[in-house]
Amino acid sequence: MPIFAHKSQQRQLAVQIPYDIKPLNLMALHCWIGNQDGSIFVLDHDGNVLNQYRLPDGVKCIVADGAWVYAGCDNGCVYDLTGKLPRLAY
Image 1 (spheres, helix red, strand yellow):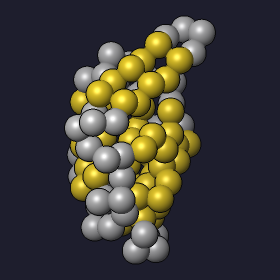
Image 2: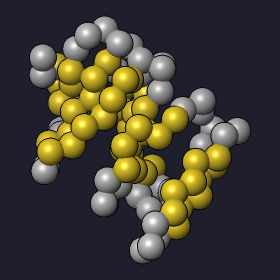
Image 3: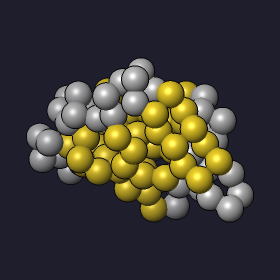
């Protein structure tokens, strides 16, 4: 299983994740991780899974702008992850 580790001046995070995924975006409150299977996981700084999403294709990027969170997908679409379920944005 791969190990994901993040160190900052304020916090240190080392989480063992049982999926073949790479971190795409670290934000102040949460860590968002996506993979080529379309899975997205939201972790707190203790490594607890707070939420997870499933997109129809591989995740290429995760971007946040204030309260809004979006994910770009291999199918060429952008999904809004602000709600409980992903919503097609573009």
